[in-house]
Length: 264
Image (cartoon, rainbow, N blue to C red; front, side, top):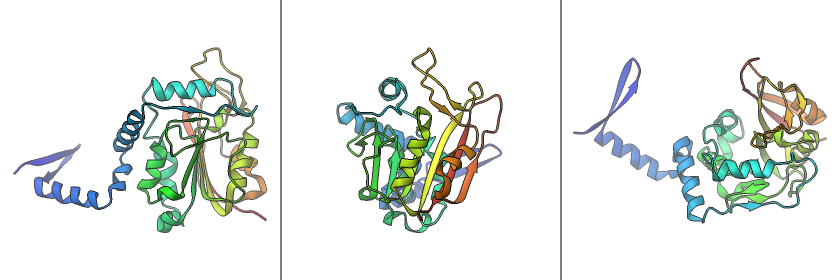
């Protein structure tokens, strides 16, 4: 009988054909489990985009808070590079998935993804239990009909609309991050979870940085500590559930915060 061998360095785990077929049957019973795999997320999102004719919609009315060159840079990332990173969504969605009420009732919660660029972050949210009808996404550049066109500095949603708001690796494209964070907080329900992630680059100082000469690299606001995020959230911060500051002075590392929001 055929078997699949998985190398785990010092030991091997062998899966025989019957076990493989049984596990495939389990996956078929809940196919969104496939979206827990970064390879599957990237394959499926890219296949859907190609089938759509590689359409990319552009928001033409962005605010002064958006860094010049942001749309061109992100469009190039989608169309010419590797369609974006399927793995990076794990950084925020991984710890989010362990928190209540997401862990127990994700299918009942409304979530907003800010700046996902492709469907990969949305697919990851489906993988941890969210349902399509409760998911919204907004970006200046949209490669999917599941995404709304809009600007994070002026979100096209009502007050206190979402249970979860995710802003993964987009705040650095802002010249006015305080305004962007105020908008995120505005659309959060009382008790909602907000997740913010950026990359800290050691060769840039913290704060606002103008465009470098190379237009392929758009740099807006730099952050080395979650204290910058909590300061912008201000009195709306109820609790911090997860945080990571920059860990190295000589390499690019993530700065991440997951916090609970309150409204008086």
